Length: 306
Image (cartoon, rainbow, N blue to C red; front, side):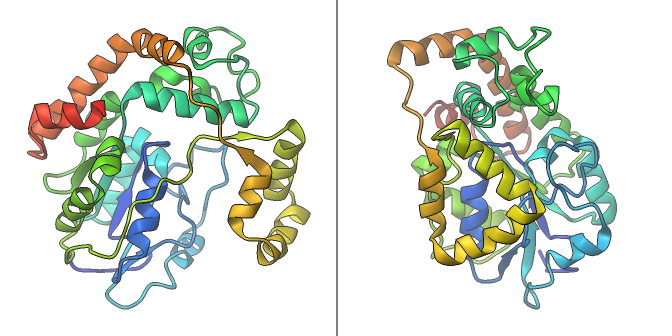
């Protein structure tokens, strides 16, 4: 694939949230000849996603890639594109040879990570992932959330349904399915697949580290402080100074704690609760992968079950 215009990326990581997209984006950004946008998730092509900060002008979007070298492959990683076939169609209208990497995950693990994130951000009215799944259709379920979709776990974990919709608009040879489970168990093998997909020389120096894991604020005060620094003018002005004085990881340790892993019985109940939904979604993922000639069906099922 030949590198082209910097303001329309060569490829996109299009989701799904909490499926390893940050780890993959950071790993690829370290590879010679591949350049990540200055803002990992600009969400430029989903104007309907109005509950998170997004780039909304062509000039601002173009500037995200101004640092790319001549001949670099450029990319961004807006995770809500995976829920929007119209966004993918728009990208393909701008650039017909754009390629797309979509990261998937077993719905049960995805459900728990999404729940922990919502709990951290103050969007959840339930105390456990099991309660959140059972109560997602309640009238008041999304009353704390900036958008009802954020707590619609049935839709957000429907990786197969959303993948099928993306598959319907992306031409042959331009979509690659990567599972979080495979990236964890065989990072070198997955990076080799990705390099081949991008027509890039083998990726030897990159590693896939676990990043952006589900986590919770240490207290309600820490949640308010983090929201203030990200969404107020003064907070955004002070944040670069804080980062200059303190390592990023030190700031994260002060704000967040890693939630305890669920007990075996709790994890088992959640897996059982989602069993029919998970089976249906994974079957669709396997069907798309088979049609795209990526994996054998049993191989992909094994990777997603890990």
